[in-house]
Image 1 (tube, rainbow, N blue to C red):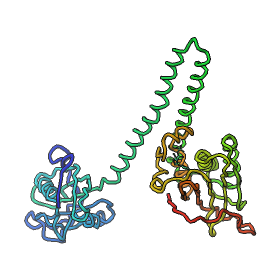
Image 2: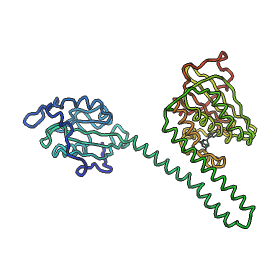
Image 3: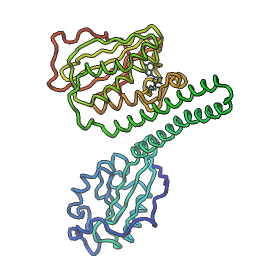
Image 4: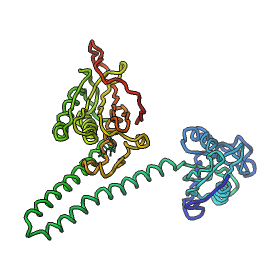
Length: 400
Ligand code: ADP
């Protein structure tokens, strides 16, 4: 096992001097100031350790492991009755000597982690009344991997937003200068003013999408779901996209089963479906068709899919297109006024409704995005069973 200290195990500067478990002091069996062997845990400590999610280890006066949680063993911190991380043992000895609580961060790579290091936040405290006389020591180690990952995603997101905002703001500043220079050329002024409007509208979309994304993320699951007719959602989303589709010479069509009802938030669902439709239109050539289909799957699930005959998505990108700001072709996305957030919004809306979103796509052939959402339990089944539907295509699907 290799142990690296990162950010150092803060041995002497941190922590107060309270010994964990003082309340249970009376329960420790002691012999001449020393603990008498392996059954000497203060009462109640076992039950506390059982409910702790972090790795917990209790060392006896000899640095032998008296108790270790399953997490501590599965991370490979403990082997038999040995605490195998030398630095943790050293820390435990200091705590045993002076009773001061120590905490810090430590990077550990165990034989079980395939050479990868795991970062733990550790807290070490004396346990029971034996402080200064070689008593029990409790070590708690919290795996920081997930919180680090979340922090990284947050940092990336902030960096991405800054970048995304900089582009239209920079363009606006430049255009304003150009307009000033062209003050005696009314035609140029008009042209540049039009470009400024475009950039301003790009900014507006971006800000709207960001607000929408944070609204949904705060509302997973949907807080006050009400019965929503999918027919209404489909009709509304189609209405909002019709102008764009007409402008691109793309036919919008709907087919499938009517009368499906789910529990949710109509605005959010319309937004998700509209995003899929807008993408279908934006990434399809003229004179093609975009089809929205609805159907019941099994007893409890409604399915809404948006199929296009557009440019398709390369297989290597399918895994990533639901990430915020991920675009297959940034220039094309920008040209179509995309914010790079449409699919992330659709994904979060679907998740907030207890559903999932999948994509099938083939370059040059088209894409189908499918939302599967739990039906409201009393939703009626029409007699035809929704047979009029897009046929299943041989597909590579990505589930989100
Ligand atoms: P954007 O605003 O760029 O469209 P999205 O999050 O909606 O952002 O989509 C992410 C990326 O996924 C797009 O930039 C595009 O490359 C790809 N994409 C999404 N929908 C389709 C589609 N129907 N056909 C082809 N590519 C698509």
